[in-house]
Image 1: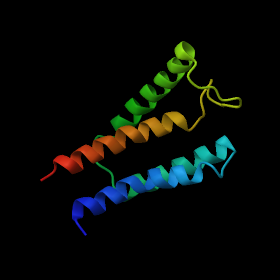
Image 2: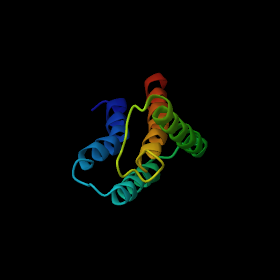
Image 3: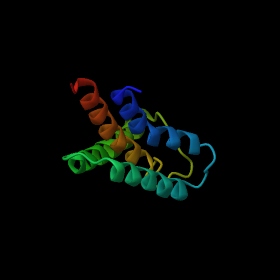
Length: 111
């Protein structure tokens, strides 16, 4: 198997697990804890320098965009959202998106 292909599968695995679990776990707090555990395991397997900075940037930007998106456009609404009008796990998802895109970009351009 191609080394880049194998690395891509490792990088995307947390997202696949995340999406597969979401329909079955209806408690937002439990789902958030599971998501954090998945991501911590992912970071334990492979951590790159500077990802801590990406964590905070992604977390803050993710929260701001979701909150502003709701305030301005009312694009989504959650009845029982625990973090203002958005699910608790959503900014964490945006954070991991920053990490995933960075890793994927580095994987693509790496010789």
